[in-house]
Image (cartoon, rainbow, N blue to C red):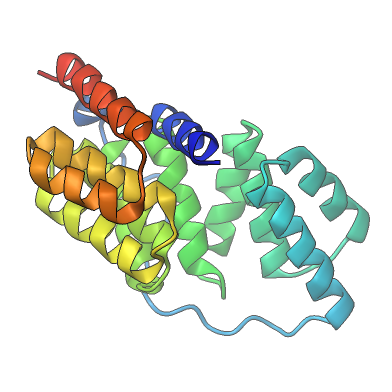
Length: 229
C-alpha cells in the first residue's frame, strides 16, 4: 500500500513538474478576476442526487474520471457541484481547455475555492507559475482548512523556490490531515532539497515512511537539483 501511495505521489510530482515555470509569462488579461471570499452555501439537492454526486466524487478520487463523466451525463443533475465534478473529470482526462471554461464560470459561485484550485492546477501543468500561484493562493484564502489545496499551493511555492512559505503550507496540510500521504511526501522532499536531512528523516519516521520511500524521495531530490542547478 505504501509503495502504491508513493508511486501515486511520484506520478503527481512528474505531472506537475515545472522546469520552465520561472520563464513563463502571466497574462493577467486572460485570467478571471479573483474574489477571495468564503464559499457561500450551494442550493440543497434532493438526497438521491446528493448521493449520486458523492459516488461520482469517489470515482474521481479512485482515478476513474471517464466513468465519472459518463455517470454525470446519465444523471443530468444541474448544480454547481455537478459542474465542478465535470470540470475535474475533464481536467483529469486531458481536456484542460474545456475544464478551464467551467472553472472560470464557477469562480464566483458557491464552489469558488475548488474552482480556483482547478484553475491553479491547470496553470501549473501549463508551466504558468505566476498564474498558478495566484489561483492557488485564492483557493487557500477561500478554503483555508482544505488540506489538498494547502498541499497544492505548497508544491507550486516549492517549484517557485519559495521554500519557507512552501514548508508552512505542507506543515499545515499534514496537521489538518495527518494521514494525507501526498503532503507528507512533499514535506520530506522539500526538506531533503533544503539539505535538512536530519529533520527530513525525523518527519519521515513520524509519518511512517519506509526506507524505500525515503530513498526514492532522495533520488527525486538529486534529479531535481541536476535539472535546476
